[in-house]
Image (cartoon, rainbow, N blue to C red; front, side):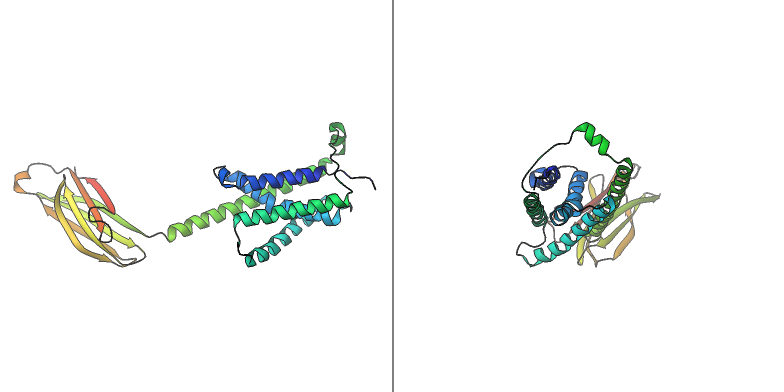
Length: 272
């Protein structure tokens, strides 16, 4: 039995190797689009193609049948691989997935080479390759690739947005604001507020200064998660400075769990 050309297996192994290399820590700074592209190949195409070639090599099938077979077998591999990795001590991690899928591709390629009677790499002649191209099939394949890329990109963007929203939602924080109000006679008034979105009750200390001089302090402000405190604070201007327009009002918010001189939030307002 004559050997059959294994150029497709060479391309398959090179793509699988590139997918593994791209996901190594030293290439972690590559654009996300490259990681997504190679991850999609490694999950949805390469293992299914390798398994389909190992099992059904030589059988005549249409392009649509072959495509559906590749995607279907890839999903089967992913499901069975998830069950296998779940029971292994290393668990479901990126590197365990990559090694498992790469091992499947290599093993299936070895089986295919054995069935083909050995390794034969023959590059097709360019003119011959052009004559064998089916324009209609090429257009259909291109539309399938574009549709798959759009679907994968949409899923990736939705997942990224969901992860960001969840991360933001569960991050404890405190809102702190101060707004100037119209002056009354020689007095200065500011509206100040605090809203806690912390995960536990927090005790705060509030300090207000004007032009670097402390004029107000509240040390018994305690808020539970979700509680809000807001007040309009009127500060009398000393008689000696009655004719001098105030400049900068600065409010600092401290937490009792932090060092005494470490402000947790601060805001500055120009009173002119």
